[in-house]
Length: 477
Image 1 (cartoon, rainbow, N blue to C red):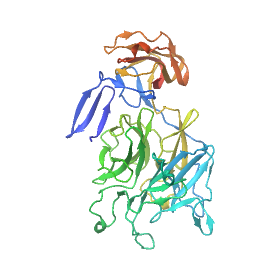
Image 2: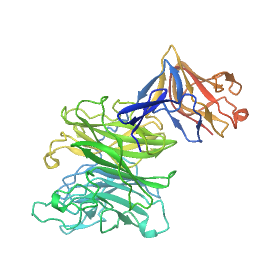
Image 3: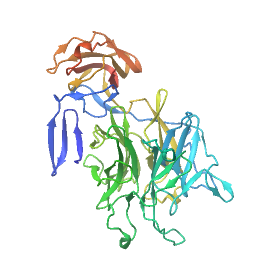
Image 4: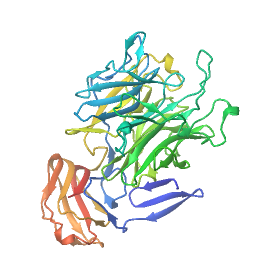
């Protein structure tokens, strides 16, 4: 596997012996399904003129932080966990505190309850579900098991557990690494005795011979329904520089050798490192929230986007900040981590949960005074748009092959603007199939007057002539 990046808008390049091998993809046909086709990179674009890519930042909720530590039993909350929608529509959150994995629930995604259904501490029931091996558990992924045949394994969780001595000087006997836990209900968990991946060992003499050397503490694991594999996005380090690698598994227990997929480069600030990566399938592709650690500059961490068309080769074509740090003095001024799940769609918005720390990364957690878990919302498919101003611009796609017959746009058109769609053949000559009408309005599902029936079975390009408009995605149903 090679580190792959996509050059905007025309060609792809891969890292090969320190040199770039550039491939012109403008005439390569692409098979697409009925899912939304996003413009987070130049993958579908053959050419564009007077049209720019724009990264859209989600809107942080005015009531943030929504979850904060609850004293006296809780002094730390981190969105090192996941948020899932339950069968009855209620939202369920697994997060970590200073003791282990905790749990919260919400009807509206804003007001959260910490039910006393977990372990007993100091004579009272708490929302703590499991204890960490030595102090808190670290990054955590929780998701529904893709294999639902075993009712005792409906939920899977992958926490990172430490081995280093705590204040009492007692060393944990279990090995350090990423563990697998299973649950019938998301509340009661059973742990596999040994790690499924081994982490950095604090004492070199304790390092096992089969260790995946350099595995870090911030990971994310998810399921790819197309590849039918578990995908692990893990932190690795080379000469002390953090970067991201990919591991794969058929059963969630035995994992492939790590392959490097993302590292900071000359387009980033000097000293930048890729600290975290939460990756998820979204419509026709994969997206990821990248935690970019500005080491050596402001020592803070903000969030950018990464994308993949196959779940294995990743690129960061747009380096604009997706989720920025808060203002000085706020709970998310210093460091942010994203919850380990795909955004949750609720009506006309995507809900994105994250945690914030009010201090820089080089400040210890126990010395951080402000922290909490917050919510940000985004337009569905609204990560990136293609934008044209009042003078207009146009975009022509690569040759597309599809089965659908109706074109729908997710777009925002200003008053007086429009998006006109034409069908082109491989040589970019107009062919019949789209009426000469403009799409106007601001909606997630705008209909274009196109009849694709004559185009089935052959490759067709789409031309979007845009004026005062933002195009987020299209789909052909």
